[in-house]
Amino acid sequence: MIKSISFLPEFIPLIKNGIKTVTRRIKFTGNPGDIYYFKAGRSGKKEGYLIIKSVKMEQLRDLEDLEYYSTKKLVKEIYSEGVGRGYKYPYIVAIEEFKKLWNKINNKPGYRWEDNPLVKRVTFKYLEKGL
Image (cartoon, rainbow, N blue to C red; front, side, top):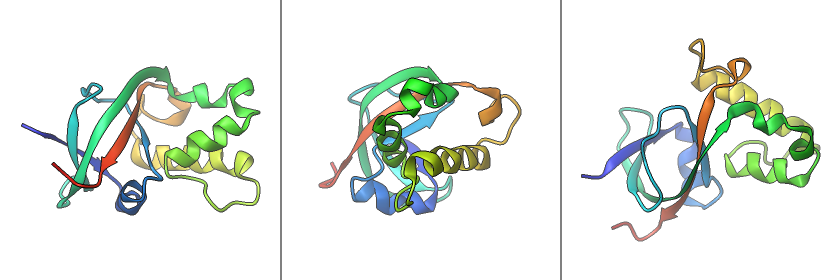
């Protein structure tokens, strides 16, 4: 049985266009090679399929690491989350936008940005042709 994974509705076109290729999740049980169908929100319709490429444990706020933050790597990472595109100073704005988005989605104590939860960084690829 294929499992589902939900995204905010605004991320669906970014996934289908290959822009959003990363998600960070507190609760995720998938492994590389697993196929998921994805949908907008918990009650949305099936939008397509993706394959999990990698799963890595990390602290959420590892993104703030100065060495990581001071490179273009941060901007690329935040862009792959579907956040921060189009800003004049993306390396400054991107992390702030990501923090806001994270706290919007994960607002329970222990899950917020400030709480620095252990998360799984999941990379995936959209399967254009489906199954």
